[in-house]
Image (cartoon, rainbow, N blue to C red; front, top):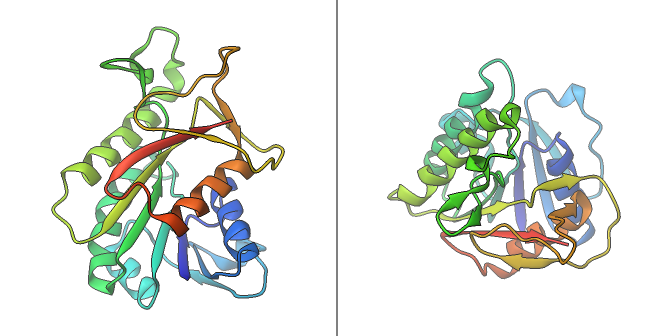
Length: 213
């Protein structure tokens, strides 16, 4: 496949690029300033683009089979970035004729219990709440959109950090995945595997899913 990755310079985005290249896909990595990144690999092109601008999205995405968005809150308007990117990606990818999008979202909107979001629980860190609400808004944009784009929204578990690439993970839908020890976590390396598995299988079209170790 020809895959375009928005937010390719970030920790999740760069791992998605590496995983896609390792599987033999052609990859276009989109960053704001290519000069600030050291993304390399056979089959990789690095281009400048803005995921919050539908015109920019349409221009760089034309000719691709699938888009991945690893765009997260970033300055100067951090809390507006993710919802703005959701709108621009749906618009721009439609203009470009790219049929599929997988968006890496937040885990705060997952359910800790039926009808109770993780971000609404008493123990949720208040400092994380604005970013989680921005990600939750993006999810609702995808869910409510009238679009020809087959979108998928992938939520991480409670903890997502660099770590071991085990190749193993569990899948869920809207409920936070927790293991027998009460932990909810996955390495970024295994998260990238799950992301590219979905790219190749299209098992969760027009819905959200989550993964954890």
